Length: 245
Length: 338
Image 1 (cartoon, rainbow over the protein chains, first blue to last red):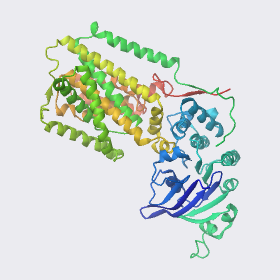
Image 2 (cartoon, each protein chain N blue to C red):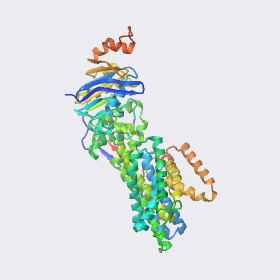
Image 3 (spheres, rainbow over the protein chains, first blue to last red):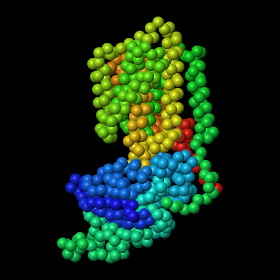
Image 4 (cartoon, helix red, strand yellow):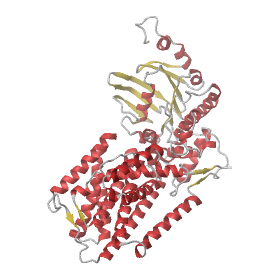
């Protein structure tokens, strides 16, 4: 069974191609990692899947339904949650209220139920001690946690993480890895874009490498990282003609 | 999806407001009671007529703030609905024959209805283009009004429904109507902002993209506030018309109203319920104090606006409350389960 099925997705900004013909799929309880150099089109891919930007071509199917042209808010209601690479907290609201937006609108919960779901998400992201703090005053680690908590409060069946570990220190990583693994093990599909490869490899079941809008390699995480094509993307190719497999 | 286990089910408490808010609300209620009693022993008829202007400004500021401060829709063309409300109330009172209070409310409703199709046109534009578009719509409203038969062309209309009513009764009717509507508009805004829609609007105010990613229907919420704010502008326009007894295209569709609304909201505090009320009072006081100084009055307004933007970027209410105090409690405070 497939939860997310992306087929032939294309997106260009003028002459810059950020997705040429990208296809991939994610099953419930499966974690797909995405790596690639800066400008490979990783964040754009999330924007296309969540509906933050319209696609030029291709289809996106979620749980069997075509959502290619569906507005972002409705995709969230269907069960697609995301975090932003650069955190985008509602700075004038408290941490709890930020998360409450997710449980109220994303999960469609009412009053008491919305409060409870928001609190649960804060517990998962380890943010309960800051619940009444204005989100604008959070430091980076807590902003990242808030991104995760808000996305979780929407009760996602598919969670898209955009460099959630970026900027965290080595000793902050294990807790995050454990949290994401637990979410995946609970049956949620996870797509995780990350530069910190060793963190990614501890969680993901499959790995996809993107470069300049193309899928360079996809499959078993360690095999993908060891492949010549991926090495060529990061380190340059000894033979300039063969950058794709 | 399963998440970490919870501690102590059902003991989570979310508190909204408390005694400081109740105390603030009590002070406001006392001011309203004072204003309701005042015409009989404090103010002259001239003052009473002036105060109607203050109540109209409170409505205008509150409505513009709802749309721009919360909805992120910076319109510079709400004079379209101020004018439509002004002309509308005169037609509804003089031609249809509605009693004045009903005509004023109906004029506001007509403006909200007019705003709905207008929104489908304007919402195709974003940011600065939206702002300019709203002004164009206001000019179109003005030109159409001038050209329509029976609307008095360039010289406008006079209200005749009050003919034969003695001056004191007329002034009292308009005064109490304006006071009641100002209170109602502020309370309605409070109820809206405390609701689910209000939470979504506040999220839109801070970050539209993030709000959409969490499931907030940004477009629909914006349409709701645009329609509501236009109804509010229409109510204010209708009050200005029945207070002044006449309307003309140049005065009712003046872009100056937009300058006043922005001043009121920015001085008071954008994106708060209390801010526009405070801003309207300050603007009104400056207007009364500096009335006799001619153009210096505009210079003073500009100086005050610059000073506030530089020294209190969140407005005077933001400076005073520091984001911690609300008379109208829309925030949530969590008492964690123990």
